[in-house]
Every structure is written in C-alpha cells, then in structure tokens.
Image (tube, rainbow, N blue to C red; front, side, top):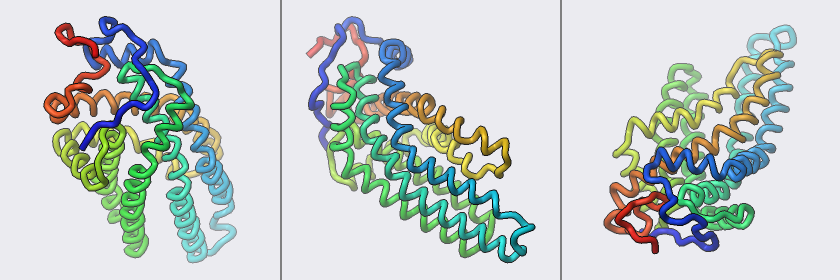
Length: 286
C-alpha cells in the first residue's frame, strides 16, 4: 500500500502557524476555509438533486395510496410496489451522489492537510482518483443491501427487516465508510482497501458505529409517515443537511481517521504524512 501524492495543491501556510491538535485543526479549518466547505456542501447538494427529485415525485404519488381508493389487499400490493421502486431508484441515483462525494472528499482532505485548494480542479482530480474504487465499494455494498432487502420482502416480517437493516448499517456501512477514507489517502488494490477498512473498524468499533449512525440517520426521513406537515419540512431539512451537516461530518471523519492512520500506519511506514497538517516543534517542514 502506498499513499496518494497530491497532483496540484501546495501548502499555503507557514509551518509554525499550523494547529497543534486535531481539535485546533477543526476550528482552524472552519475559521479559514468556511467558503470552501460551503462550496463542498453546495456541490454535494447539486449531485443529490436527481435523487431528491425522484423521492419528491414518489412521495407525491404516495398521497394517492389511501384505503378509500384501494381494497386492503390491493393497497398492500401497491405499497409494496412503491417500496420496491423507491429502493431501486434510490440505489441507482445514490451513485450520482457518490460521484459528487468522490470530488469533495479530496477537497476536504486537502483542507484538513492544510494544503492550498483550487476547488474545481481538485474536485475533478478527486473524481478521477476515486472513481474506480469508490464504484467497486458501492457495487459490493449495494448488492449486500439488495440481498438484505429481498430477504425482508420475501419473509414479510417487520422485525426481521429491522434487524437486517441494523446489521447492514452497523457492519457493512461502517466498513464502507472506513474504505472511503482509506481510498482517499493510500493506493492499493480493492482487497487491501477492504482489509484495511476491517482493521480500522475493529480498532475503533464503538466510535465507528457512532459515526455511521450520525451519517445515516437523515436517510430515515424517507420512512417518516407522510402528512402535509412532514412533506413540507422534509426536503428543506434534507437540503440543509447536505449543505452544512455532511461536509462537517466528513471533516470530523477525516480528523478521526487520520489520527488512527498516524497511530497504526503513518508513523512507521509513511512519516511524510504523519500528523500532516499539524504543528510539531521538533519537526522541520519539508
């Protein structure tokens, strides 16, 4: 496994001005780069528009699925078909969101590393660098999701479905998140990415689960019972989360994952990126 080399950005800070801790780094990144972080959120929102439009249209259609229009058996079938279409469409269109994530994860990584940013250049480089392995990870975990969902559908057991989704989130989504962070820093093959994701997941089990739950909880807006009130506030809330919440979460994820990379890999194998973006009095700037 080798680390990824920057293709464009260069440091734009004096070494002595770097923050000394990751808590200070978080404050420094937001204080000095809020416009870039906001641009990342807006870009993520733009790549989410196809998914949001699809869900919006499906929600409008669901308003017509009422007991006064269908018999109980017909309504069950219609709702099942609606659920299948929503899940199938969401899986396809979530990949478009992932493409946006490929780019902004590089941008936010460079911010945390205190490197200069050319936003659109670095966004395009991020998509190019991450496209192959992000796509492979998404394919694997999408297949696992579909398998879990189909088991639930065929068993038609709500409790079984809840447990399957909980296992999927706690285990597979957590592994996928670690995989995305590893992909953004190192270069290796898919199986090594997966192996390293499993390693870091095992070394930070409870915090990984907490981070995953913070990541996925907005998705439960999809399952909120529809009413005029929830329909009115649902999509504005999602837009706010995409623009402000998810870039914040990615930065927190980077700071945490970098601390783990430093602890288990970088200090011995990649000293050039050990505590990168942080100040150490006894370390000379390269």
